Length: 421
Image 1 (tube, rainbow, N blue to C red):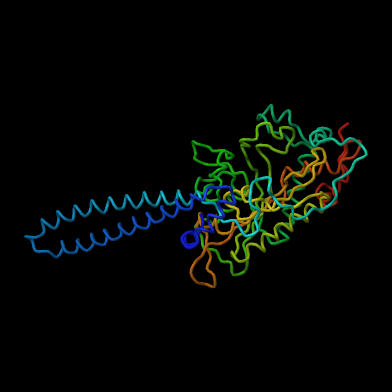
Image 2 (cartoon, rainbow, N blue to C red; image 1 turned 90 degrees about the horizontal axis):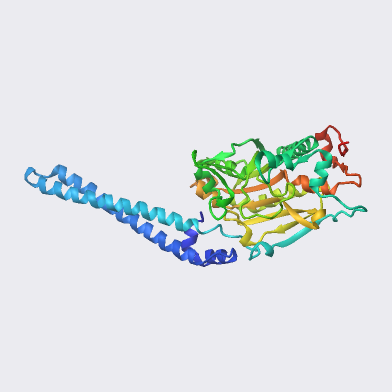
């Protein structure tokens, strides 16, 4: 959640942030009122409890002939304390609910508006031009024996697939290249659990407006994660971190699951929008003052991967209404997909400032003093969807696909993926 002190001291700033996201500014007034009621309820409870303690001492020291009356008063006071405690608990829950409706404060310069209001920061490379009719990634994948959608649907339903042969090898190569680069940049590799408790999913901000995207196992009350950002954020939940030697950086390799609710009829062909995929996710805990610099560092690593894989792309500054509740700023990198004649998102990189850390109680000690929330950041370095852009960009007239040089060492030196005969 947001900083309550900031909410009290500068509600106008919080309202501007909500408006830029397309949310109602009334949530700010509601949260302020709920916070006022919470503080008043806590004060009333604490005053009554103090009176109860003082009265208990009087009872213990009172003469025998006065004790009966004082004990009767004590019982009445006890009932009032219980009622005040109940009111305090209810006020606390109401305040938390009101605060949860306020999303992270967007950073200065983030474009206002929704999905279509992003700002293009830069483009790299020219979209490929072919002297033949290019095939889409699924047709290429089928020729190469790399993607089997038909059997994926037979086994699991729509939006599932098998990566087979060179397709499976290509994904492992991509992920391993990304992991090697993350490790070279100081990231600790982690294979996290992909089922998490509600408090972790809620703490990262995924049980708000996007809750319908998440698979829930009701019998176990566990959630399947849509990104290893979730378990990596929960990794240090309820801890005080030592950031004296710099940020803590992790690279999570995991399978991810998304219901793709609301995407009926969109990207039904191929592996662009599917229910299950693999991803190498970078996650950083850092001093809040260093968060924006760290954000740019993550984007630089992603761009280097794109360039070395020979992909044409653009970097966009995502508009406030398309950020998601936790992000204060998000940069997407979209690669050119030739048969769609469009850029499609391959990576997202978010600066969540202290929003997730406040919800998950992850702190550090600035200069060894009082604890304060850390900042968290996340960004994708490779995922299954990258195969789409790779196959389409590097295809040849005979249906073969050139392997980018950066990937060749991870495929035993293979230079060209050939169609099956």
